[in-house]
Image (tube, rainbow, N blue to C red; front, side, top):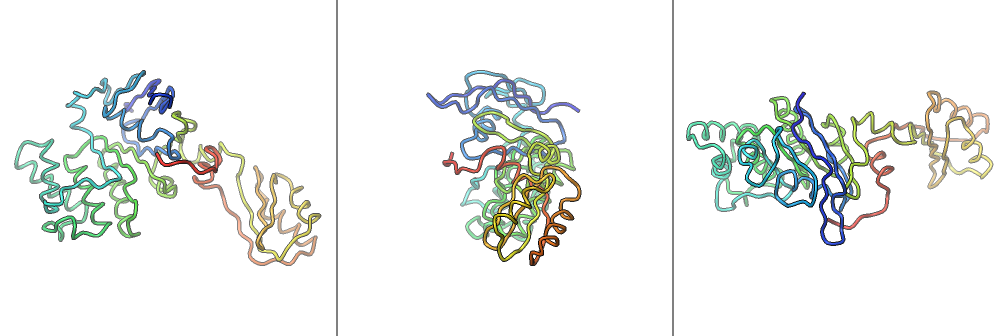
Length: 314
């Protein structure tokens, strides 16, 4: 399968700050590719460089197999961008907004009209076609933003935080829509701070930090990169240090902490961890309540790889 995006050794500096540090990325045709990273990791800079919206100091970018430049209009016609900040005209209706953005790429009036109608149906905006943006809810406004970005049927679509501040129904509609666009043939680049969304829809994921790709793979491959493979949690009234030490000594356990009535034991490997915990509780005659086990999530991977300290906005 052909590569839609190829980025090689990309360097971008802002005076003393190195925003992209020999950044490399390849995205194949037909992927839903998740691009993750803490604030200031270089995600926005990387996307802006790929779209040729800013100059970079070193490296090479190819989109659809061609060098990407500011005047690469043929390539740009095949790209759709849905930004986090809603970018529509307040003085135009829903229909007029979608028709306008579609018309930037599609000159034939009949084709443009058909594409606009398809985008309205796709976004579930048919009954709101005569509404002005200020009359729409946050979720509907997001859907209008998406419809404007995809009306011209692009082959490559960038989604930047498309579900921020929307209700669960609209979020589900948006995610299902993205999967459907992919099914129809579009390659998707998706950024979000909602890890469960990325885990739900992305076929491959890259985690960026300090201007570099520090991990890349499927969600299953990424989960294998971290130490934790299972966490067993037990509701207990309290444990003394000797009892806690006994749980730390369990096979494959590497951490056991007890706080606020909950004992958490983290394991690296092992298939019988829950049984070993229950056996220890029984042999020590420790009264307990609910017991549950959790496998690592993408959020666990993200925090372990990038660190848990808060980052500045940017």
